[in-house]
Length: 231
Image 1 (cartoon, rainbow, N blue to C red):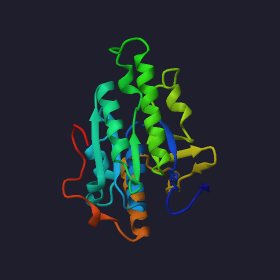
Image 2: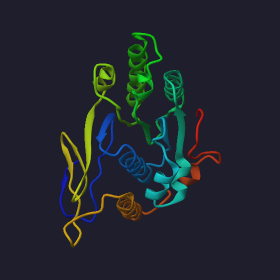
Image 3: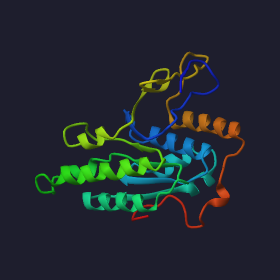
Image 4: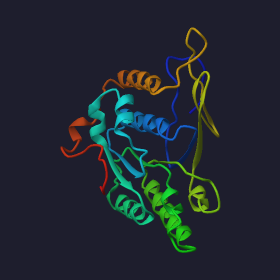
């Protein structure tokens, strides 16, 4: 990882272990990093969604080829029990061939107020342990938190790297302890911060690795972005 100022494309974070993404945009950076991982690894991306972070339209807009999305497996949870079940299923099913596990707003379902006192913390602690074990197999995990507080403390403790993303007047910026992305400028001195910008970046990266659909032959015929349910 390193620093990049005026190259052809922004340098994106190399994900390993458990990475906590903090951003003013809850959807775009997650989709961009997931698609980038699909371009550089021919395994599937497993996505445990808490609500509506996994959006087919967003993923399709940044993906250089629709075929890449055949390797995205999405399941959604709307309650703490559903979310705990998804993570339990992930722990059983994720193998070393996986490219990435994405867990946005991993604490969100445990904040609904319907759980008895103390149970939310215990359930989220178990969820954090499952995420940690998944990362321990060598599969990188990218997660976000709805709120960083005492409840989400168990999740914060398993994080290996914190990545901050912000949309600036000069373009998207990722920064970590040993990493910073500086984007190239346009002629007018700015860079677009829209999904169209990320789509251009990922098309360039796809061309650089020589294929827009690496590993497509390994995709299952029933794979793809699901609208709900379990894996």
